[in-house]
Length: 292
Image (tube, rainbow, N blue to C red):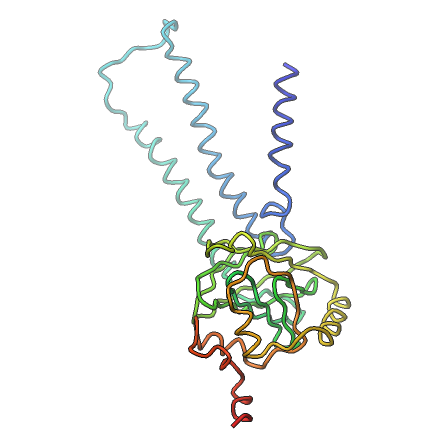
């Protein structure tokens, strides 16, 4: 008896060992609420699955050939009570799971801002081949394949794609949302604990898909302000010409930052779509007028 118990404990330890840094280890209010929906749905379904398994074993045991007390009824074809039981339980399961999903999908609408006394920080996201561009419009800086956010502060994302449809996902902070060319999707999340969280693409997009991931660094507010000040003094300028170079397909791109991002660059990317005839023309309208 000791060995089966030990084997079960080892299997459980190995299985649960993969639950860190994922949806079962949430670090923000959105991911915590999503985990609750997962657990609620699992509990409702197990309330049906477990009795069904036990009933199957019980029926098999009771109607074994050696049990002379079991009634053999070859002409049995209908029972109103059994029909009600067989259909009412699955119907209740569908209603309960559907209700949990319905309420949760409205409460966790990606476009709905997170209720907080702290002013949200805006981040604009562009999925490229095969990397992520993050623009901080209020701070005037940008980064590639690294996202830095303050702890305890809601983050409001505007997301688009330079071409291929993609999916933005930080499992420990929020659910995934798609990025599409010429469109802007929105997502809100918040990190309640300092740390580094893994972000990734959840939609296959070509040869460099496997390396299309990034780290989310959640820092205390003071350290985030210091990070912004530091990045404003280091790195190149991200204008239309620099974006044209960045937008070229590349794999396993190392994280980097831009000290200045051309104003309204994100909206220009959304307007131009996949590949304009002259990518370097993606500039701020004020810059175009000044050049004239």
